[in-house]
Length: 270
Picture 1 (cartoon, rainbow, N blue to C red):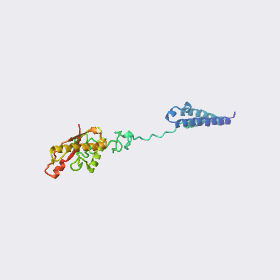
Picture 2: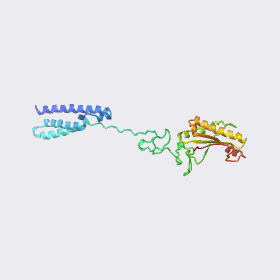
Picture 3: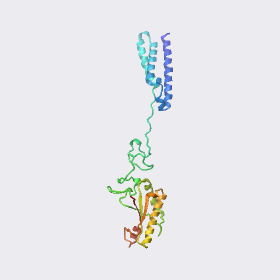
Picture 4: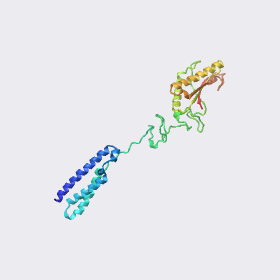
């Protein structure tokens, strides 16, 4: 058989054989990682390279003249090996997109506080903001703006929080519309701070009998707790106490003083 004929036959074998390997390899890689790892031995780039080298060497030898057979075989073998390895090589897989499991805008690899609740503002390392640095995150802090270095309770407050503008209808325990709006914000932070229990205290001024004021203060504390419970705060986390007129914070001799004494306070129930 002439060398040219031999070269043609070997070349056809190279094209058909290596194309088959490459096609099988592509199908395997398209089926996922598990299929790729189980690809047949003959689909491995090293095997394809060896096969391509042998066939390419044969082609080079067959296609060369008698005087340069060795050189032709070497060139053909090198070229065939490169082509075989290339055809059977697995395509590069794109790198997986970075994950942000809690959706706070900081990828998991950089997130020092995984599991942040949805919608909570975070810093550069994925931790909830604590603007006053008191150890209670803003979304749980009932007393934002605490002075630096102050010792606070689980509510983020130095002392019991007076619920300003949480007022009631005249001579009743019915909350005003403005009071409900303020309590909505209190409820949101209590829901976010689910491990803390709270004490709700009712206070009155000295107008009226002591017994009447005691009952009114208790009903007003209960009214606040009922509203917070309706917004989703577990009722078992709240304790109500009515102190009537027994704990004034200002004089009962003036309108301004009596207004300060008519109040509801929120504190940690330990």
